Image (tube, rainbow, N blue to C red; front, side, top):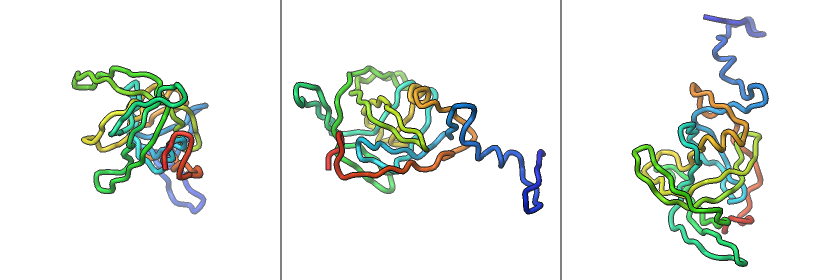
Length: 180
C-alpha cells in the first residue's frame, strides 16, 4: 500500500489523498453523483446522477404545457426536485428549444420537450439542454448526460460521489424562467 506521512506524523493512504482531487489538467473532476443547481429556474440543492452512457441530460417534470409568449414557443412545467422521502417541486417556465425523440436503454422511444437552462456544479456554471421527462420511478430527478459533461469540461471519477461542493448562488423566488 502506498502511504505518505502527514504533518502530524501519521501515515496517510495515497488513495485517500487522490480522492479529494477536484481538477485534472483543465477539467473538473466529478463523481457518479453530484449536487447541482439550476439558477435560472430558482432551484438549488438537487442531486444529479452523472450518466456517461446518456448523451442528453434529463429533468424530472410533469404537467408540461406548451404555450406562446411574445410570439415565441415556451413550455410550463412542474419540476420535481426532492427525493421519494422528501418531496419538493417548483412550477417553472422556459423557452422551448425543440422536441426530440429519445430512446431509453430498454429500447422504448419517447418524444420529449427540450429546454436550455443554466446549470451550476461546484464552481462551474454553463448552459445545458435538458429533456423534460417523468423520472418518477428513478432515484435521481436529474440525469446529467455526456454532452453536458463535455460542455462543462468535466471528467468522471466513477469511484467517488459528491466530489464537488454544493453550488452556492442567490436563489430568488422568481427568475427569468422560474415562476414563484
